[in-house]
Length: 316
Image (cartoon, rainbow, N blue to C red):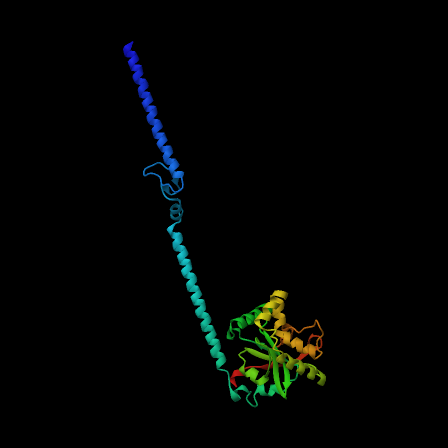
């Protein structure tokens, strides 16, 4: 009996010891976990704290950074370098373009070279010019500065025709001049000088089939001189073109802007009523002949007849 009682007591003591050890271990783990969860408290080395996605015991901020692959950082740097190189190339190309435009414009003819050669075809045809004749220009868009080049190219693309600019013949002190809207305002320049110095690919004159009366010629000239002296801006300036594109749409702006001044002058001469307008698309000659006598009523009382083709302007 005594031996049996001693054995039972010893077994009970061993079981109690094992429970005590297990409680101590679990308590230690719980304390370590609590420490890991507390902000600003670093877990004890070797303590079984909470494990992050990148491993145990690593700070949360560093885990997020190390989770991004190194290839991602390298790809971003490469893209940034490519963007810088592209911007530098675009800037260099723009500078070269503007330099070429400046050089081309600085080499315009001077003195007698601004006039037609006596007896040349251009000189003979210019003698037939009358007030109200419509002048069409097929400009070289590459020979303009960026804003002008953009307006030129947009007009050609949206209208589908090569002519993107128009003027009207107006005689001033006996000299045939071209009244036209430039990017800076309305100007009247001698026809010969305007054509010789032009870098347009082609220049044609669509003559009015019916000459203007003296009253109409006077009204036309007064309207042209008033527009030149007004200085209120040009209907073909990049700003006016942009406004027209926003209010009426790009296609309508391409149709209206190049002939805006011509329509204004024709209304002053009584050839157009309010709401009527000449379109360059309708004014383009149908045949590539030097003299085209076919008449075309394009708007209101504006009837175009003979076409005068001026070519090789800069060779004279």
